[in-house]
Length: 69
Image (cartoon, rainbow, N blue to C red):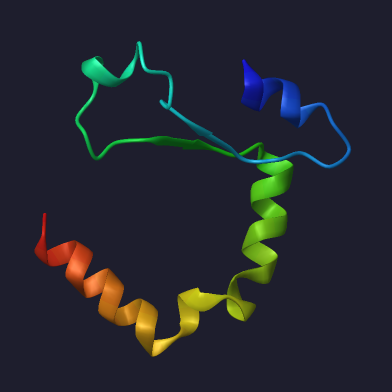
């Protein structure tokens, strides 16, 4: 419900979820959720070329993540 409510706001925020202790036993230990209203997501995409996602450091992190799958 929180992502939906955020989508109605002027400055919509992203929501990180599954921190509720009652939900934790139902999901793997390394899982969280991330929900972003579309208008916020579109804004984030516009900034992507100015973020860590274009650095060599991120390439190393991404490769490490892919190896662990």
